[in-house]
Length: 115
Image (cartoon, rainbow, N blue to C red; front, side, top):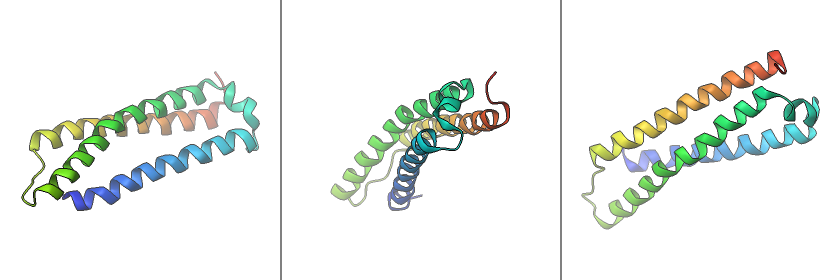
C-alpha cells in the first residue's frame, strides 16, 4: 500500500471518529434514555475509557504518516521503512482490539443496563 492510498483511509478514520464523538454526545444529551441512563451506567464508562485510550494510540501513526508524506515530497524515491510499518501496525492492532471492546461494552450497556 502506498502513502497515496493510506492518506484517504487515514482521513476517513479520523473523520469517522469525529462523527462518532458528536453522535455519542448528542445521544447522551438528547437521547430517548436520557443522560441519567448513560452517566450512571458502568458499561458506558468502560466504553468511554476504551474509546479514550484509542485517541492517544492514533497519534504515533498520524505523526509518522505526516513525516513520511513530507519525506516523499522531498525525495521522489522515498520508501517507507519496513520497521516503521511494523511499529505502526502494532498501534493499529491495539486500536482495533480496543474498538472491539468498545463494541462489546456498547452491547452490554444496551442489554444489561447497569450491574
